[in-house]
Amino acid sequence: MNRLFFMKNPELFQCQRKLTTDKNYFEGWYFKNTNNENGISFILGINIEGKDKKSFIQVITNDTSYFINYSKNDFKFNFNPFLIQIGKSIFSKEGIHIDIDDNTQNLKIYGDIEYSNSKNIHTSMFCPNIIGPFSYIPFMECNHAILSMKNSIYGSISINDNKVDFNNDIGYIEKDWGCSFPKSYVWCQGNNFKNENTSFMLSVADIPFKIFSFRGIIFVLIIDNKELKFTTYNNTRIKKFYIDDCSLNIILKRGEYELNIYSKYEKGRKLMAPIKGKMQKDIFESITASITVTLKKYNNIIFSDTSTNCGMEIVYK
Image (cartoon, rainbow, N blue to C red; front, side):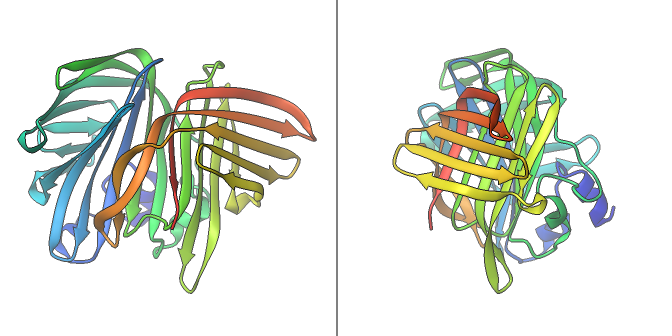
């Protein structure tokens, strides 16, 4: 299997060879699950810092978060069908089975969620995933892929006997891999709009590129199966970028289109992100943000709607 095969199938474990080397590396998958009131996301992965190789599962809910360490040997993967197992927990594009029992945190999480009706972005040779032609550059510190913009979810998860049920609710799946997260970035994602056929994802990040860096933009909005992308590689520019302690406002411009993203948010729950392969950077994610997306064409509003239960991370240097 060559590099092009893995670019076309980004859900797969990208760098099996890293498990036998000491080169700093991380790879992580993100599974977000929401209903009208509650959400729970799972971040699973493997991180390598020299000879120190570990796997992990992070859990984030409306109210709290957890980090569960595992050994490298607890990490197992399968290509066909795609599957990642860490400890007794299993993750795939068809669903997840959670079985976590961590005595050090007095934590028990168990349950099953089934995924169906997955919808993803359009891809091509030029744009094998959301980062487009940057997918072909081998020295990117962080690669990003969307695995499912939206999918139906059924099942339940219990955390210390507190049960969250999902019945034809909404999921989202993405992943990252490389050596480090960007030093600063904004990331947000939502698909709990009044228009049920709407999904969006946005990331604006400072991207190191050899001897210089640039601000990279990836945004995708799907409305009634119509997809619109605002990205660095399709000449999108930032007209406004404003952040304070409780709100965010970003305006993007691409040709005749203008996109306004406005969010109110509260401080999120603590997670860990990789720096040179080591999970040592504190970041905070909310999965209860409210985000309004307004799209104009030739200064006329053609779409405006608000999503609740959005995921949001804002990270400064």
